[in-house]
Image (cartoon, rainbow, N blue to C red; front, side, top):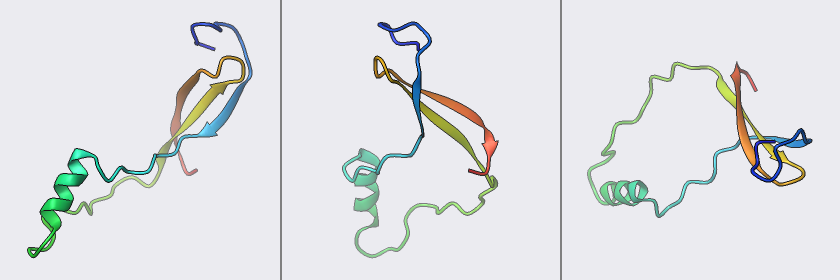
Amino acid sequence: CKGKTCKKHTPHKVTQYKKGKDSLFAQGKRRYDRKQSGYGGQTKPVFHKKAKTTKKVVLRLECNVCKYKMQLTLKRCKH
């Protein structure tokens, strides 16, 4: 474990990283919603050229002793 208090081999709890829910009050989202409102249709480009078929899997490791959390990226695979 890389935690400041730990610095020894400890068991970790492993979960897969998931993206958090987008905030409605982030500056970009507020600006986008304001721009979209009213007439005028879609105001920003919508991305269509998706190239990748897989995502890099990110593991979230949490130390059972000191609760230090770190993320470990694996190679691309279908998860």
